Image (tube, rainbow, N blue to C red; front, side):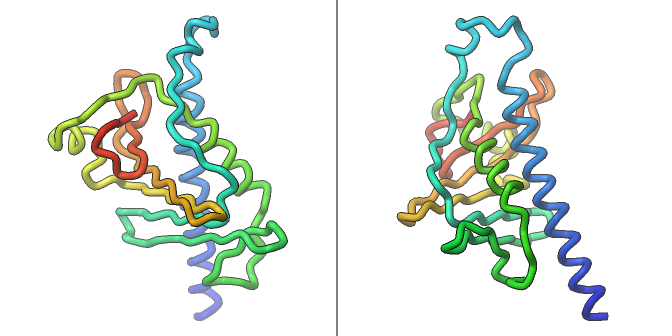
Length: 165
């Protein structure tokens, strides 16, 4: 029974990690644009986040109300503190981090109202990812609803009420 529970937890962790990776990848690819790729288009890209060398990643899934924490050890390997005997794929985490670093927006909404935040799915976001760097600096990404018009997701950084991408 205990082995089955551990297996279910591991499967859940894998599904959540893949879901986060997929959302970040979709947002990133969607923001690359579908036009001609001209230099004028690239000028409309807005850098959303500036993370450097994260040593901890925390992911909160609002639907399950669970938080997953992953920490980078002194050897550069990612560990799941709740399951230290589990070997995690370093390249998977490196890929997620690089995708988040490359995350761009195509639109910036300044000073959104509380009604807009609710409409954008950011009042109670389904997924929140927090990246902590080696100096303790934190960057929080809140992923909101998908905009059906342009297939992009609304993203809020560091709970800012100033901007939504």
